[in-house]
Length: 159
Image 1 (cartoon, rainbow, N blue to C red):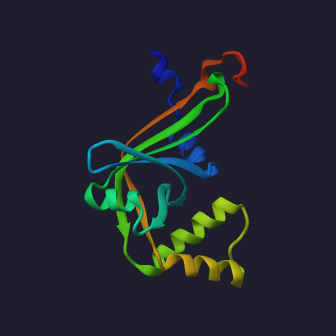
Image 2: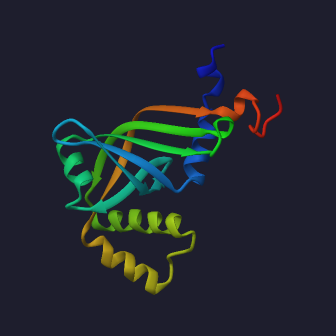
């Protein structure tokens, strides 16, 4: 078995990392073909990445022109502990205002780590939602790695 296959994560491990992480690096394509990368808080809808942004943002304009995106979710501060998931996909706009609000509530809940069920928090998210658009990333390909599976120094796994 090659090293690439040894460090690939199972579907369950991918789902766990997506569930437990809060931020991703979102890649879109600028008009001149260069990558546009930004850090985003994200939500999940049935295991698929969701996010929202201001309608006039560069990433929203890029997605409108070309919906191909990449989403990098990673963790670990040492080589032997690096884990990550790279989702290549297409960002599908979410048009229903109630669904946009749900994405915003989920992103805010995950971002802050606190419930947003109270009237003040919900009112804030509702106010913010008026200027935002939301997306669901339909995965085309998922790549993953977990260097802890190599069993090296600092991996936290037995050799």
